Structure formats: structure tokens, C-alpha cells
Image 1 (tube, rainbow, N blue to C red):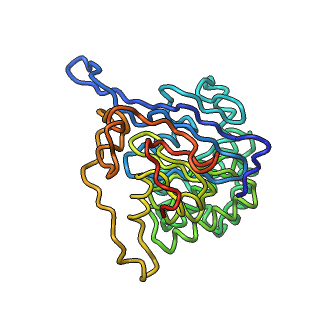
Image 2 (cartoon, helix red, strand yellow):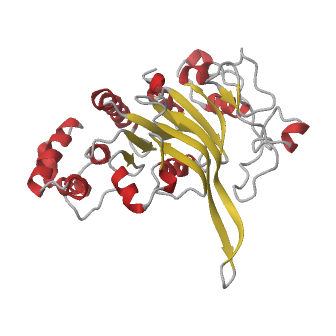
Image 3 (cartoon, rainbow, N blue to C red):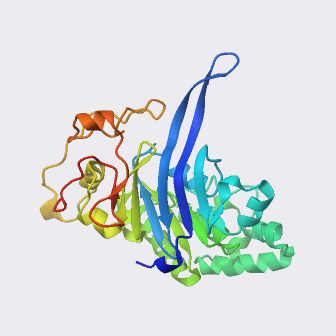
Length: 334
């Protein structure tokens, strides 16, 4: 693991909640809430990559957006280097923007189609570092070279680049202000498989070169396994399990994690015929989550207590392996 744990976490997320009101009627009366993120807690240490994985709709992207305060948390705290960004004024949050950046899923819609690449990259330096346009453009050319793009890309528009090249521009833009933490929200899911590998390798190389810390969000276990030091598994707005990548893949303790891994495509042809875990039922609505453990409606091991009491996130199989389950799977599970 690359984390420097003796200096403490760079990012501490505690009981983070993000609810969206459900409104109906002529006067838009609030009749309920969508609990997109419902009590999420985790730490990120300097220099490490923490992957957040789960099915679509589990709240992982909303968590990432709340971490950089593109979404205002409903409750909870997000401490970056000891400062709770959830309570900062707009002026103080603007100053902190240089430390926190985000790479978005769609490399086309996240770039202004009417602005040339050079101006897109120069804009953050002009706004935050007060550089003149010539100096900012020179820095933009250097950053393009760093992410593997030719200098002539400066004068191109986003639509003139391929998807992989546009995502490299998105990464370059995130690096322009020399941040310490970057949230990568599904940065390779919209790319071809061969391009995905190139972008993942680029992110790892940049992490070593610039000493970056990542929160890497993905529904693809392959990308998560390759790039992450630790993994946070989410389901219906809650953390089900968190541990090192090696522990998650070798000894999952939560039934949901076991099911996710069982659905992971097996590259070894000798193991492709193994018996699969059958999961029944649909994911409940975050507007009306089930009582007790939110996964009990689909869990093959659920018992009465699972339907009545929500399990806390407790240590299981080591201080840094935590699982929210009344009946964690045995250590020898794989």
C-alpha cells in the first residue's frame, strides 16, 4: 500500500448523508426523500487510491460529488486535511478548490464544446493563480505533454478529439491547479477496453509523479482491482464492506460483496463453469429503503434480525476490514 498512514488521513468522511426531496402537487409539497447517500463513512490516506464500487444507483457518484462539494451534504462531515468543507463559506471553498479536483465520467459533456482545449486548460490558472493568458497557455502545453497529447491539441475543440484523448484533457484540467486529492467518477466506463487500460496506467503514473491521492469510483471490478489500494463497497446509499483490495477479492465478508465478485467475469477458463450465486428480487427504491439491513430483501443468508435491525459497520478479520452484516461470511470464503 502506498498510503502514509502515520501522518493521518487526508480525507475523513463521517456519516455523510445526501437526501433529495420528493415534491408533488401544485405547491410542490415535500412528500418524501430519496436517500441517495445514507450514513457513509471512510478515510483516505495520502498517496493511496480508495475505490468505491457498487451497482448503478448505490450512491457512489453522489458520494464523490459531495466530497468535492459539488453536492451540498444534507448531514455529516467531510474533513479535508482537518477542515470540514461541508461548513465552508463560498469564498473559503473557492480557495480550497485548488486542492480538490474531479475527473468526470463523460469526457465530452464535461468539456465546453465552444472553447479550444488550450483555453479550457488555461482557465483554472487564470481564475485561481492569476496567471496571464500567455503563461497559462504555456503551462497548458506542458500538461498536455504530461498526459500524452501533442501540443497541436491546444488549438483543437473537444469534438475534434477521440474519447480517450478527451478524457486525457479532463485529467490534464484536473491537474492544472496541482491538487492533492482527485475524485475520479467512472473515468473509464465510457471508453473502449483498450483505451481504458491506457487511461488507468496514466492515472497510476501521474499518481507516482505528482504524489496524488485518488478516490476512484467505478462499477467495474476490473478497474477497481487494478488501481485501488482499498475498496469501499456500497449498496443503496450505505457502506456494506471496506478493506484492502487483496482482502476484498480473497476473503469477502459481506454477502453483497460475494455476489459482486461472483458476477465478475472470470478470465481463467478452468473456473468459468463454477456454480453461480442466484440473487432474487430487485434493488429497493432509495425513496423507501427496507427496514433493518437494506440488503436483506436480496440476501440469500438473511435471518429475522436482518429484517429488524440495521447492522453497524464493525471490524471483521482485522482492524481495517469492516463489514456491516449480522452474519459475516466465514474467513475461508472466496
